Image 1 (spheres, one colour):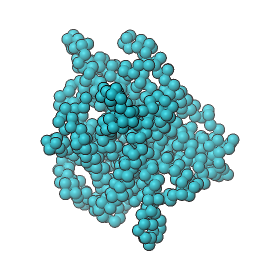
Image 2 (cartoon, rainbow over the protein chains, first blue to last red; image 1 turned 120 degrees about the vertical axis):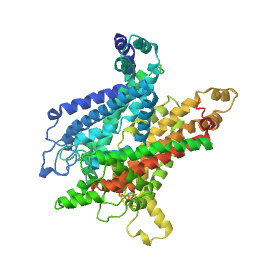
Image 3 (cartoon, chains in turn brown, yellow; image 1 turned 135 degrees about the vertical axis):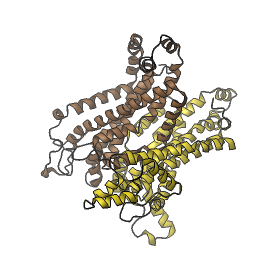
Image 4 (cartoon, rainbow over the protein chains, first blue to last red; image 1 turned 180 degrees about the vertical axis):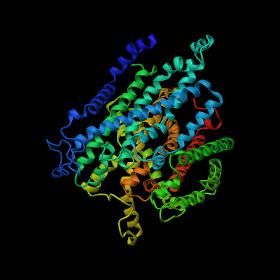
Length: 284
Length: 328
């Protein structure tokens, strides 16, 4: 493990720090986390504070991003929406990466019929338009943020499984795995102590990109009214009212969308940066 | 080639079985029975009526038996009847919606490739210049734009501000009385924005893919040879490199299908296009489970067919694949 640690300090961090896009992404990611955590300190209005005298006000010094159809401050709703979006992103991507990593490790390590079956399941899952599958499952459940996270996670693990499997296949053949076997390590120990730490990089990248994907999916679901339910603010459901008032209130559509765009962009840039920094074939 | 085709078609069978298994489990393992959904609308329905309905849908039988019955019906393209008040066969409901969704997605796919290929080539041939960097930025932003937000922005810009394009539906009211040319023109106007949105979805990913595929080919020895014998850069790129760089894109066309079909829910709902995506959304909102399951199955089968067609095209274009030698 000491070797790992110094690798990260000597190679990974400097490489990542030299990638301007990745650094920008990381800064935005941290900033968004801070906004989500410190939401009550940032806003002047409650996210659900209705004001009948300020309905659909355009952006002003008082309401930076304007107000919505109930006179609620859009800036506050976006700031509080960050909590929901990031929570969904983290949990859903976490579930997907967890399932994908475990199945990928098992498939790659054991090979044979286990590998064959697992990879066929991956093929089958890839056949479904993911968005259809998510909507179909949600048809049978009450719309709730927890179901959404679970469903997004359950439909997003296949890519991770393939990547981790490929990594595991090459690691499995290495001498140190043979050595571990010779001294009588159990399969479980070999998989989780010896293979996992070396196969973790594709999972790490997938997790970062997965957060971005999950935020996009959640916002689309909420936009369609099947995701996070009002009055809880989410970037997607603010846009729903944006659609209804598109002719009079552009700010209702513009700002929540920008929030999604910037956040997703930041996670993607960070994820790509991590991938490049971990890739030994790229020399910079 | 025949052997390759046979092998590829045989491989579909387990995939199809898997698709039906997963779809079936989604319905039957999810908490709450389909009948409950129908009942929830009407609290007055008594216990007896509930039992009768369960029997009617065969829900009182063991799961394995239900699965076999369901697959049997599916094989005869019998998708059951809709729960909505019109009670029509799901097959008919989907059949009248499918053509418009397919047409939209095929046009979008063509647009996507028509744009992604030149963008990818430009980025690859101008590697590390400002042009390449600009395209990279565009690609990253493209990845991050939520399609439904893009749809809203376009609606605001072209529909509300500039008033160039109609913002919903397929036809103008009363367009039935138009002459053919005007009728088609009217429809084309209505389809502009939906197609823009649909093709934007994977444009970013595709052009990035084209770029790396092109760079990969340009780095190979035969390109160096072509340059060494003094061919002009244009001939090298467009005659020698392009054809090989395009090959892996065929697979990408197949892979783009689930995304396009899934995305049709979003743009058809926003632009009020009476296609399969809109039907799906309405069915989800009304908990019309036979329609939901029917469309999920159809969506998966379309993906399967799309992938098959893409693989066969690839094999036709590249002898290395059909003879099982693999690339490189």
